Image (cartoon, rainbow, N blue to C red; front, top):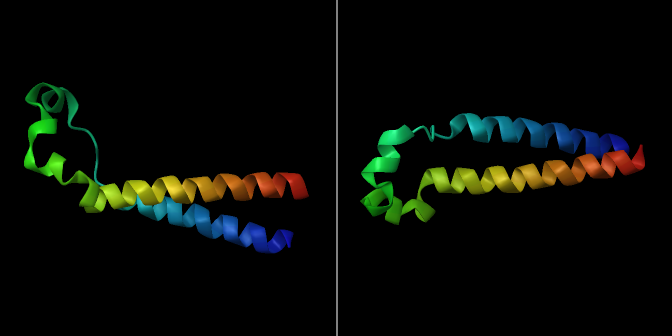
Length: 76
């Protein structure tokens, strides 16, 4: 059982690495804050974009990774 959860955790960790590396950078910097990014066309469709889906996937995979880590801590 512990070996199976460890393998799942390793796969989950690799998935987090891949998803984070595929995401685009969020470094709009000061020009993005001054320019008002919220009014742009891209900001209105942000929930449907690939970056939003990748960010959501990162959160879910991270949560699964955390849960698997806690399970391994309890079993060990």
